[in-house]
Length: 102
Image 1 (cartoon, helix red, strand yellow):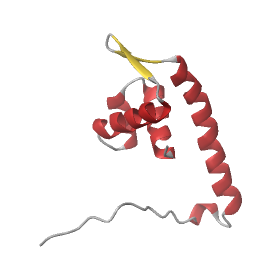
Image 2 (cartoon, rainbow, N blue to C red):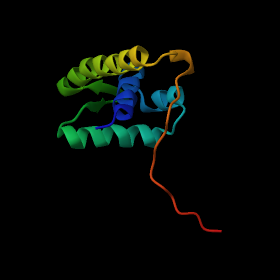
Image 3 (cartoon, rainbow, N blue to C red):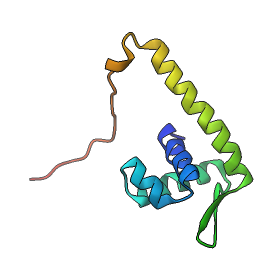
Image 4 (cartoon, one colour):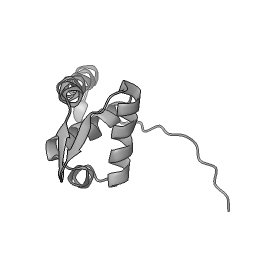
């Protein structure tokens, strides 16, 4: 489970819309949907159900909403407390290497 997946889930829960969450996060709706689906697979439970045109959190989704918010708050607290100058903290983004062909 990645904290970014939790972040996407929390934004979707707040917005009650994958499209609105994706717009506020600056990513595609499919990226948000895939992240939530990965969480559901890992946790082996549905987190969000579609009721008509609305998204509704399941019981597991409401629980993750609370715990996820606590987790991200703790993550921010750790970064702040261990960074000498939080405003100038460096963020390292890591991803898989992609072969390039010319």
